[in-house]
Amino acid sequence: MIRAGRMRERVTFQSPAQVRSPSGGTRLEWTTVATVWASVDGLRTRDLMQAQQADVMATHKVICRYRADVDHKSRMIYRGRTMELSSVIDRNDREYLEILAREVQ
Image (cartoon, rainbow, N blue to C red; front, side, top):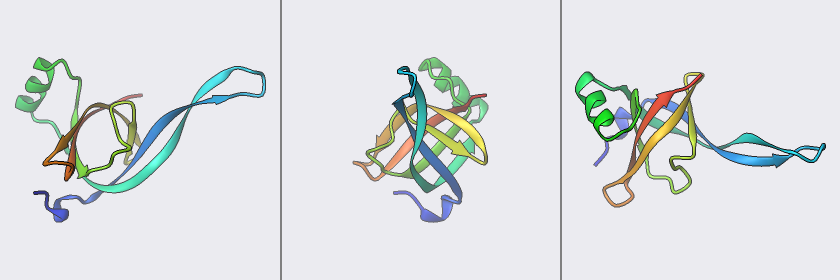
C-alpha cells in the first residue's frame, strides 16, 4: 500500500512521437501524457549497487499511482530536469508504479 502523503512532488510524464516535417522527414517530439503526484528519492549507495547489478543506470527512485500509459520508453520532467526511465515496474497488482530513473542532459 502506498501513502498519499509521501507523494509530494509533481512530475510530468512524456511519450515519444515521430512527427512528419514539412520537408518530408521525421523528427522525434515529446508529448505530455500526464502530470501526477509522486514520491521522488535519490538512490542510496546500496540501491545504486543493486541497480547496477541488474544492469540498470539509475539515480532516482520514483513511486506514483499506476498508469498504463507510462513505460520504459517514456521520460519524466522533475523540477525542470529531464529523466530517462530505466525501469518501470507494476507493483501490488496495478496499485502503483516503481520507477528507476536517471537524469539526462
